[in-house]
Length: 153
Image 1 (cartoon, rainbow, N blue to C red):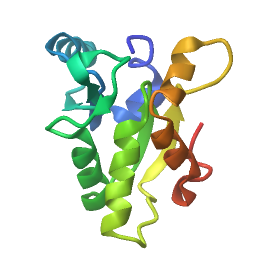
Image 2 (image 1 turned 135 degrees about the horizontal axis):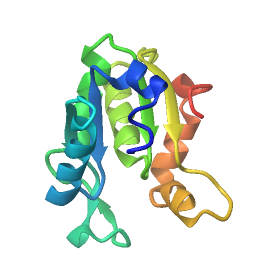
Image 3 (image 1 turned 180 degrees about the horizontal axis):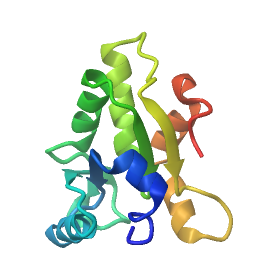
């Protein structure tokens, strides 16, 4: 994060509005994220994201209130802003948000999502692969969504 924040592309797309969905959230993680972005003058808004029993990553994913997918769905439904999405965790909350949005409006094209960057790759990187397999149903949903074709990198 520290390396990404000062880049020109990040500043161009995220300087005014930055929303962070913190998966396996904690007070420490929230504080660190706020400090990172505050150091370059960005007021980031944090959502409490997906969690699991006892906060352990190996346990089953559960929905805990407040639900970040609700917040993300509201942004997608009720704003005309353009969003660039960076996922560095399992894509559970974004998949849930898009399901909620498309259930409310079947004709919604999700045009306000410009691009999705996802550290959910393959190969010998166990952390990137973890992001794909941790919630395989969410991964399949997101990658198979017709409105999102050609928007992921």
